[in-house]
Length: 354
Image 1 (cartoon, rainbow, N blue to C red):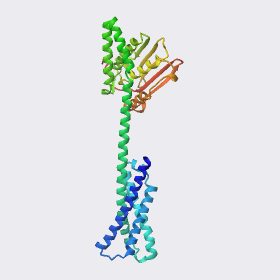
Image 2 (image 1 turned 180 degrees about the vertical axis):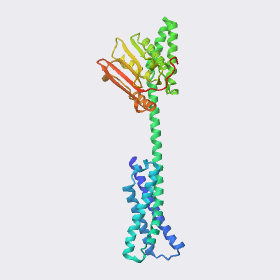
Image 3 (image 1 turned 90 degrees about the horizontal axis):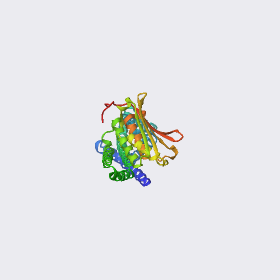
Image 4 (image 1 turned 60 degrees about the vertical axis):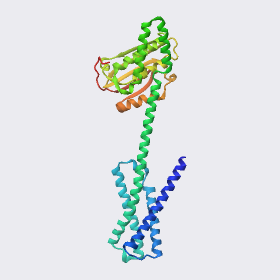
């Protein structure tokens, strides 16, 4: 399909070249015939068309060797300057060639005024060609930029959708509801409290895009609800600890990011540890940066990490904080994996904000 499209563009280019320069040749003949009232014989008409196709060759050669596609990615003033340069070079080349021919056969006609007039005439022809060619190339480039932006936006939306799908997986919801059903027979108050936590967690997960940044305190409250539910679902075989220093407590954090890190840690930390999982979350400030670490049992080589989740976190961090932010995994002990995010300190939230 790409090959067919390329051949089609090539044919259109040559068709426009032939039609364009033929039209200019006809216009030149009509000018001499009607405006200057000159009597043109067949030889002069043929010479005019030969001249037109000679200009076609000059324009094609210049386009092929001196107008790279990358030119149209540059700023408009630079493109405009290159367009003027192309007009001067192509028109000047033709004037020099025909001045040499004129000097050889009709030296009496070769004057400075004659050369200036010829330069203006040829500059008009090449100016028209370059204007049309540059116009279409700029339109083509703008279309390409728009398509790339639409594709990029679609990929970001797809990544966000994949992240949303990865949060609160159906397995987790099913286990939570089963646990609530069992609790309802044993402890109705606890079952009601668990159901409230699950509904709040669902609301938080679905509404995270409304606030790109929230307070760390609010994020950690939702993370703790999730971990409490996971602990109930796993028969109290999940132990966790959350610690935050005073400065970190009032800082902002990308919404659901710690939640996603905690969920990934639970899924990987419980997988090969039937005796129970352990998880540690630590948030602190250092060197004017916010640092959040999530540790769990396991080995980095055995982890099952979703690429959509990783790409989404990195894209969100870069979009919010620039290149100073980073996100990575590492083995920091033989049987422990650490997930780390770090970014420049942002807005201070009130410590008691919920």
